[in-house]
Length: 187
View 1 (spheres, one colour):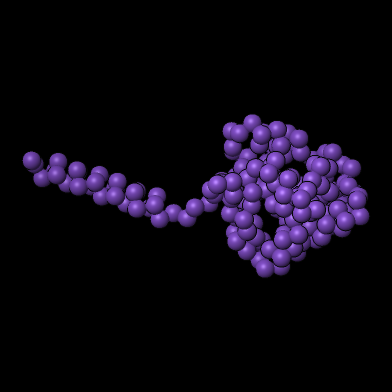
View 2 (cartoon, one colour):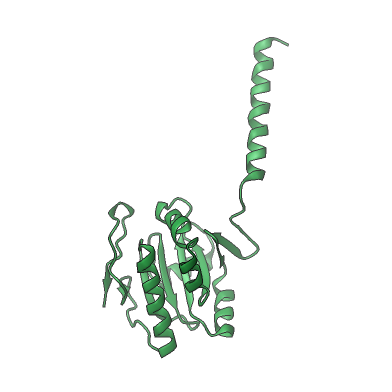
């Protein structure tokens, strides 16, 4: 065997070995009905999440995300890992919906809540009525204020009555135009 051919075979064998090791060493982001964002565990099946929320008498946070969304990664690193945010999220049933999913149920949910881009959060009652929306990116303190507003509405039996893609009663946060999403709240 000539040396050039042997080096080519060795190179591809090493490349395959590195690929195999890196695939098996990568962290698991989801499995068995759950997805992990930051340090927070989210359900991935909306129907199961609604059952959980009804049983525990709590609102549902629906997080619409994608793997390519840089602001979703910002949420993972700066929001869902924050102890104050995690503590507030403990009062909600959480469900994460990957907008790149081909699942028909995810597409229906996306259409039902008029979600066209990531990241977006829609907080709903177990019956599916909107309590508030967080369109696009919101800094952690604004994110907490949205959650608190949603929780107050849920406790009082009030809903947002918006049915649109605009934010319902919450703080106004700084738009991050490069994401194509703004977070200006409208009453």
